[in-house]
Image 1 (cartoon, rainbow, N blue to C red):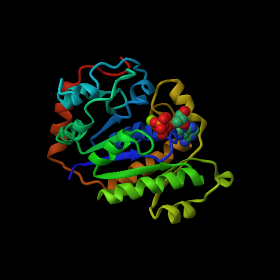
Image 2: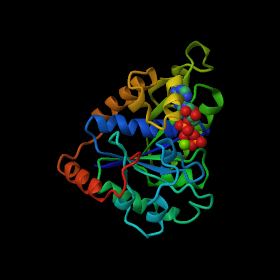
Image 3: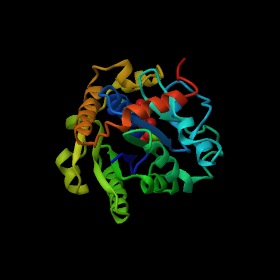
Image 4: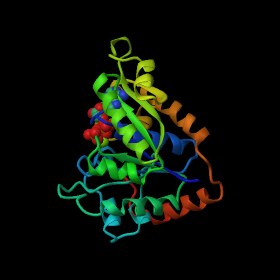
Length: 259
Ligand SMILES: Nc1ncnc2c1ncn2[C@@H]1O[C@H](COP(=O)(O)OP(=O)(O)OP(=O)(O)O)[C@@H](O)[C@H]1O
Ligand SMILES: [Mg+2]
Protein backbone atom coordinates (compact mmCIF):
# COMPACT_ATOMS: atom_id res chain seq x y z
CA UNK A 1 0.00 0.00 0.00
CA UNK A 2 1.22 3.50 -0.79
CA UNK A 3 2.02 5.33 2.42
CA UNK A 4 2.00 8.92 3.58
CA UNK A 5 4.46 9.57 6.39
CA UNK A 6 4.29 12.85 8.31
CA UNK A 7 7.61 14.14 9.63
CA UNK A 8 6.70 15.76 12.92
CA UNK A 9 8.42 17.22 15.96
CA UNK A 10 7.18 18.47 19.27
CA UNK A 11 9.78 21.21 19.30
CA UNK A 12 10.44 23.47 16.31
CA UNK A 13 13.70 23.84 14.43
CA UNK A 14 14.99 20.34 15.09
CA UNK A 15 15.53 19.38 11.42
CA UNK A 16 12.24 18.20 9.88
CA UNK A 17 12.66 20.11 6.62
CA UNK A 18 16.30 19.10 6.27
CA UNK A 19 15.31 15.48 6.79
CA UNK A 20 12.30 15.64 4.45
CA UNK A 21 14.34 17.03 1.56
CA UNK A 22 17.33 14.74 1.98
CA UNK A 23 15.38 11.60 2.73
CA UNK A 24 13.43 12.36 -0.43
CA UNK A 25 16.67 12.68 -2.41
CA UNK A 26 18.11 9.52 -0.84
CA UNK A 27 15.03 7.42 -1.52
CA UNK A 28 14.84 8.74 -5.09
CA UNK A 29 18.46 7.64 -5.57
CA UNK A 30 17.43 4.18 -4.48
CA UNK A 31 14.82 4.18 -7.20
CA UNK A 32 11.86 4.75 -4.89
CA UNK A 33 9.13 7.10 -6.00
CA UNK A 34 8.68 9.79 -3.41
CA UNK A 35 6.95 13.15 -3.29
CA UNK A 36 7.90 15.55 -0.48
CA UNK A 37 5.08 17.88 0.45
CA UNK A 38 5.58 21.13 2.34
CA UNK A 39 2.72 21.28 4.85
CA UNK A 40 4.18 24.02 7.05
CA UNK A 41 2.60 27.28 5.84
CA UNK A 42 4.16 29.29 8.67
CA UNK A 43 7.65 28.14 7.74
CA UNK A 44 7.38 27.05 4.11
CA UNK A 45 11.08 26.32 3.75
CA UNK A 46 11.29 23.57 1.16
CA UNK A 47 11.24 25.75 -1.95
CA UNK A 48 13.54 28.37 -0.42
CA UNK A 49 15.98 25.67 0.69
CA UNK A 50 16.20 24.62 -2.96
CA UNK A 51 16.72 28.16 -4.24
CA UNK A 52 13.15 28.91 -5.30
CA UNK A 53 11.89 31.88 -3.31
CA UNK A 54 8.65 32.51 -5.18
CA UNK A 55 7.42 29.15 -6.35
CA UNK A 56 4.49 29.15 -8.70
CA UNK A 57 1.93 26.36 -8.49
CA UNK A 58 1.92 25.66 -4.81
CA UNK A 59 0.10 23.37 -2.40
CA UNK A 60 -2.35 26.12 -1.54
CA UNK A 61 -3.73 26.08 -5.10
CA UNK A 62 -4.40 22.36 -4.81
CA UNK A 63 -6.04 22.91 -1.41
CA UNK A 64 -8.33 25.56 -2.85
CA UNK A 65 -9.26 23.30 -5.76
CA UNK A 66 -7.67 25.62 -8.33
CA UNK A 67 -5.29 22.90 -9.51
CA UNK A 68 -5.03 19.14 -9.35
CA UNK A 69 -2.42 17.91 -6.90
CA UNK A 70 -0.20 16.55 -9.68
CA UNK A 71 0.03 20.04 -11.21
CA UNK A 72 1.81 21.41 -8.15
CA UNK A 73 4.56 18.78 -8.12
CA UNK A 74 7.96 20.20 -9.07
CA UNK A 75 11.02 18.27 -10.11
CA UNK A 76 14.40 19.26 -8.69
CA UNK A 77 17.52 18.38 -10.72
CA UNK A 78 18.58 16.05 -7.88
CA UNK A 79 15.61 13.86 -8.79
CA UNK A 80 13.57 15.07 -5.83
CA UNK A 81 9.89 15.74 -6.41
CA UNK A 82 8.39 18.38 -4.17
CA UNK A 83 5.13 20.18 -3.60
CA UNK A 84 6.05 23.64 -2.32
CA UNK A 85 3.87 25.74 -0.05
CA UNK A 86 3.12 29.38 -0.70
CA UNK A 87 5.54 31.83 0.96
CA UNK A 88 2.72 34.39 1.35
CA UNK A 89 2.15 35.50 4.93
CA UNK A 90 -1.57 34.83 4.69
CA UNK A 91 -1.24 31.43 3.07
CA UNK A 92 -2.37 28.21 4.64
CA UNK A 93 -5.36 29.65 6.43
CA UNK A 94 -7.85 27.96 4.15
CA UNK A 95 -8.11 24.46 2.87
CA UNK A 96 -6.68 22.43 5.74
CA UNK A 97 -9.65 20.11 5.43
CA UNK A 98 -8.59 19.41 1.83
CA UNK A 99 -5.08 18.23 2.75
CA UNK A 100 -6.25 14.64 2.93
CA UNK A 101 -7.70 14.84 -0.57
CA UNK A 102 -4.46 16.28 -1.97
CA UNK A 103 -2.39 13.58 -0.28
CA UNK A 104 -4.71 10.90 -1.64
CA UNK A 105 -4.32 12.33 -5.15
CA UNK A 106 -0.53 12.27 -4.78
CA UNK A 107 -0.67 8.70 -3.49
CA UNK A 108 -2.19 7.71 -6.82
CA UNK A 109 1.04 8.80 -8.49
CA UNK A 110 3.82 7.67 -6.20
CA UNK A 111 4.97 5.06 -3.69
CA UNK A 112 5.50 7.39 -0.75
CA UNK A 113 4.39 10.87 0.27
CA UNK A 114 6.66 12.47 2.85
CA UNK A 115 4.94 15.35 4.62
CA UNK A 116 7.13 18.08 6.09
CA UNK A 117 4.87 19.23 8.91
CA UNK A 118 4.59 22.31 11.09
CA UNK A 119 6.17 21.92 14.56
CA UNK A 120 4.24 21.23 17.73
CA UNK A 121 0.62 20.28 17.96
CA UNK A 122 -1.16 23.25 16.44
CA UNK A 123 -3.75 22.92 13.66
CA UNK A 124 -1.34 22.46 10.75
CA UNK A 125 0.72 19.85 12.54
CA UNK A 126 -2.45 18.02 13.55
CA UNK A 127 -3.73 18.16 9.96
CA UNK A 128 -0.48 16.58 8.70
CA UNK A 129 -0.77 13.89 11.36
CA UNK A 130 -4.39 13.28 10.46
CA UNK A 131 -3.77 12.67 6.76
CA UNK A 132 -0.70 10.48 7.32
CA UNK A 133 -0.65 6.72 7.72
CA UNK A 134 2.42 6.87 9.96
CA UNK A 135 4.45 9.49 11.73
CA UNK A 136 8.22 9.92 11.87
CA UNK A 137 9.43 11.98 14.80
CA UNK A 138 12.51 14.19 14.75
CA UNK A 139 14.07 15.01 18.11
CA UNK A 140 17.26 16.48 19.43
CA UNK A 141 18.89 14.62 22.28
CA UNK A 142 17.54 16.72 25.13
CA UNK A 143 14.74 16.32 27.60
CA UNK A 144 12.40 19.04 26.31
CA UNK A 145 12.51 17.90 22.70
CA UNK A 146 11.97 14.28 23.76
CA UNK A 147 9.14 15.16 26.15
CA UNK A 148 7.43 17.17 23.39
CA UNK A 149 7.88 14.26 20.99
CA UNK A 150 6.17 11.97 23.48
CA UNK A 151 3.10 14.22 23.51
CA UNK A 152 3.01 14.07 19.70
CA UNK A 153 3.35 10.28 19.77
CA UNK A 154 0.51 9.98 22.28
CA UNK A 155 -1.76 12.15 20.15
CA UNK A 156 -0.90 10.10 17.06
CA UNK A 157 -1.59 6.84 18.86
CA UNK A 158 -4.93 8.19 20.10
CA UNK A 159 -5.79 8.78 16.45
CA UNK A 160 -4.77 5.30 15.39
CA UNK A 161 -1.62 6.36 13.56
CA UNK A 162 1.48 4.22 13.39
CA UNK A 163 4.76 5.51 14.79
CA UNK A 164 7.33 4.68 12.13
CA UNK A 165 10.15 5.65 14.45
CA UNK A 166 12.36 8.41 15.78
CA UNK A 167 15.23 10.28 14.16
CA UNK A 168 17.68 11.88 16.57
CA UNK A 169 19.18 14.89 14.81
CA UNK A 170 22.06 17.26 15.53
CA UNK A 171 23.62 14.71 17.87
CA UNK A 172 26.66 16.00 19.73
CA UNK A 173 27.97 12.67 20.98
CA UNK A 174 29.24 12.71 24.53
CA UNK A 175 27.98 16.25 24.91
CA UNK A 176 24.34 15.19 24.42
CA UNK A 177 21.93 15.44 27.38
CA UNK A 178 20.25 12.12 26.55
CA UNK A 179 21.62 8.97 25.00
CA UNK A 180 19.73 6.90 22.44
CA UNK A 181 18.62 4.27 24.97
CA UNK A 182 17.06 6.98 27.18
CA UNK A 183 15.24 8.53 24.22
CA UNK A 184 13.81 5.11 23.34
CA UNK A 185 12.76 4.46 26.93
CA UNK A 186 11.17 7.89 27.34
CA UNK A 187 9.24 7.75 24.07
CA UNK A 188 8.54 4.03 23.93
CA UNK A 189 9.57 4.18 20.27
CA UNK A 190 12.49 2.97 18.24
CA UNK A 191 15.31 5.30 17.26
CA UNK A 192 15.92 4.52 13.58
CA UNK A 193 18.98 6.65 13.05
CA UNK A 194 21.16 9.26 14.74
CA UNK A 195 22.20 12.17 12.52
CA UNK A 196 25.22 14.03 13.88
CA UNK A 197 25.60 17.78 14.14
CA UNK A 198 27.34 18.50 10.86
CA UNK A 199 28.46 21.88 9.49
CA UNK A 200 27.86 20.59 5.95
CA UNK A 201 24.11 20.92 6.55
CA UNK A 202 24.35 24.69 6.77
CA UNK A 203 26.91 24.88 3.97
CA UNK A 204 24.50 23.03 1.66
CA UNK A 205 21.66 25.30 2.74
CA UNK A 206 23.74 28.37 1.92
CA UNK A 207 24.23 26.91 -1.56
CA UNK A 208 20.49 26.18 -1.77
CA UNK A 209 21.29 22.55 -2.48
CA UNK A 210 20.13 19.37 -0.77
CA UNK A 211 22.88 18.15 1.56
CA UNK A 212 22.98 14.86 -0.34
CA UNK A 213 23.56 16.66 -3.62
CA UNK A 214 26.27 18.98 -2.30
CA UNK A 215 28.03 16.82 0.32
CA UNK A 216 27.14 13.22 -0.29
CA UNK A 217 30.04 11.92 1.83
CA UNK A 218 29.32 14.05 4.89
CA UNK A 219 28.48 12.30 8.14
CA UNK A 220 24.92 13.64 8.15
CA UNK A 221 24.42 12.47 4.54
CA UNK A 222 25.60 8.99 5.41
CA UNK A 223 23.19 8.80 8.34
CA UNK A 224 20.28 9.89 6.12
CA UNK A 225 21.30 7.32 3.50
CA UNK A 226 21.22 4.65 6.22
CA UNK A 227 17.69 5.68 7.11
CA UNK A 228 16.72 5.58 3.43
CA UNK A 229 18.17 2.07 3.12
CA UNK A 230 16.12 0.97 6.10
CA UNK A 231 12.96 2.58 4.77
CA UNK A 232 13.48 1.33 1.27
CA UNK A 233 13.64 -2.19 2.64
CA UNK A 234 10.47 -1.90 4.69
CA UNK A 235 8.24 0.26 2.53
CA UNK A 236 5.91 -1.66 0.31
CA UNK A 237 6.72 -1.35 -3.35
CA UNK A 238 4.20 -1.09 -6.12
CA UNK A 239 6.04 -2.08 -9.29
CA UNK A 240 3.01 -1.56 -11.50
CA UNK A 241 2.11 1.87 -10.30
CA UNK A 242 5.50 3.48 -9.81
CA UNK A 243 6.85 3.70 -13.38
CA UNK A 244 3.55 5.00 -14.66
CA UNK A 245 3.30 7.38 -11.74
CA UNK A 246 6.73 8.78 -12.43
CA UNK A 247 5.90 9.44 -16.02
CA UNK A 248 2.65 11.16 -15.21
CA UNK A 249 4.08 13.39 -12.53
CA UNK A 250 7.08 14.43 -14.56
CA UNK A 251 4.89 14.96 -17.59
CA UNK A 252 2.84 17.49 -15.71
CA UNK A 253 5.66 19.32 -13.99
CA UNK A 254 5.60 22.88 -15.17
CA UNK A 255 8.94 23.97 -13.90
CA UNK A 256 12.20 22.36 -13.00
CA UNK A 257 13.68 23.88 -9.87
CA UNK A 258 17.01 25.63 -10.20
CA UNK A 259 16.90 26.00 -13.98
N1 LIG B 1 22.38 17.58 11.43
C1 LIG B 1 22.47 18.91 11.42
N2 LIG B 1 23.66 19.52 11.67
C2 LIG B 1 23.74 20.88 11.66
N3 LIG B 1 22.72 21.71 11.42
C3 LIG B 1 21.51 21.16 11.17
C4 LIG B 1 21.32 19.74 11.15
N4 LIG B 1 20.01 19.50 10.87
C5 LIG B 1 19.42 20.70 10.72
N5 LIG B 1 20.31 21.70 10.91
C6 LIG B 1 20.04 23.16 10.84
O1 LIG B 1 19.04 23.43 11.81
C7 LIG B 1 18.19 24.48 11.34
C8 LIG B 1 16.74 23.99 11.44
O2 LIG B 1 16.56 22.91 10.54
P1 LIG B 1 15.16 22.68 9.80
O3 LIG B 1 14.71 23.93 9.13
O4 LIG B 1 15.32 21.46 8.97
O5 LIG B 1 14.23 22.40 11.07
P2 LIG B 1 12.64 22.25 11.12
O6 LIG B 1 12.34 21.25 12.17
O7 LIG B 1 12.10 22.01 9.78
O8 LIG B 1 12.21 23.71 11.60
P3 LIG B 1 10.68 24.26 11.73
O9 LIG B 1 10.11 23.62 12.97
O10 LIG B 1 10.87 25.73 11.89
O11 LIG B 1 9.96 23.88 10.50
C9 LIG B 1 18.64 24.80 9.93
O12 LIG B 1 19.46 25.95 9.97
C10 LIG B 1 19.44 23.58 9.51
O13 LIG B 1 20.44 23.92 8.58
MG1 LIG C 1 10.63 23.07 8.71
